[in-house]
Length: 188
Image (cartoon, rainbow, N blue to C red; front, top):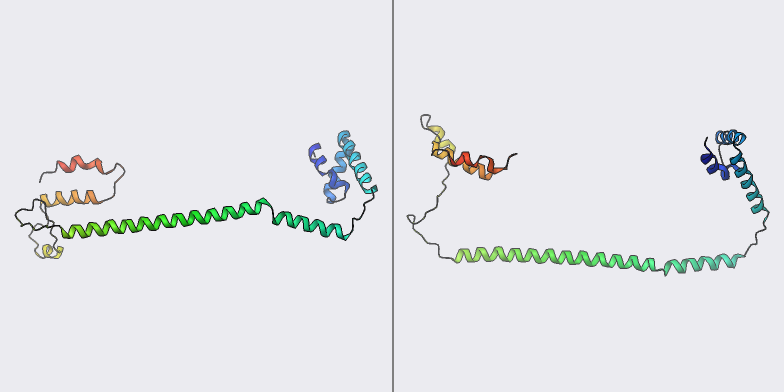
């Protein structure tokens, strides 16, 4: 047992609050260590001095008044008012964040509604010959599968499907741009 460990247990040893095995270890250490013996004798003298001092009972009124003073100080302390302030600030910040979220939602609905409204009011009447963009048509795959001799997809359609799937799919390890050059060079 080290001196530091023994000295940390000396007060408990003097008060006889240790187990038998701990007491035996301290006894063995005190037999060989002069420094710890001196600390042990000082602890015994301190205990004897403190036990010889007469304590005066202040009376029941002292304890009642002290309890009331302690309760009054803790109930009226700045710490409680600080805790209340923190709760009020948290409530205000939660209220402000809710208001911000609600305003953002209303603005988003307004923008979406106005886009739909103005888009539907725009005069978009064009003839089929004036449309310059591609129109994607869909057909059931069963129509193509019924005719065994028919090629389901031409090379041109396969290239378009590959480009579309590439743009709609998730990026791979190298990202979407890794295969763009290969897709653009596909012969249609």
